[in-house]
Length: 184
Image (cartoon, rainbow, N blue to C red):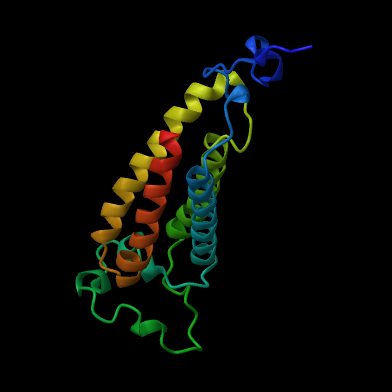
């Protein structure tokens, strides 16, 4: 007439949680899900910015250290005052001074950012991945977190106000989100 408590327990002996198997892990906490969503949106937004830089729709002075990428150019040595004065005229193309290497680097950066977004998604256990890759996903998530910390410092050192304040803030939020996800 009476059943044992174990028969009502969904995690009985046969279905116990094995922490080494991500498929059997408990669902992520709300903070982890929120951090993952924010990180994925910001990574995606930064990838769009990189594509716009690569296509010449945004001026090259807002990224990659604030310079136009020409080593030894007089414009780089003049300092950061009125960096975007060349782009105030609507008729002038923003990509006139964007060198090929910067376009290629921005395209590569966009794909890397999208890969980072995917890895954060996988790490937060919203996507169940094979057990064999669990260790690598954890390691890569911490590498991304460290990279974002260094990137934040690089953004603060930029001569571009947009890169320093806007991208620096975005990178800081991304770093915090990745710390939350990596610790999960």
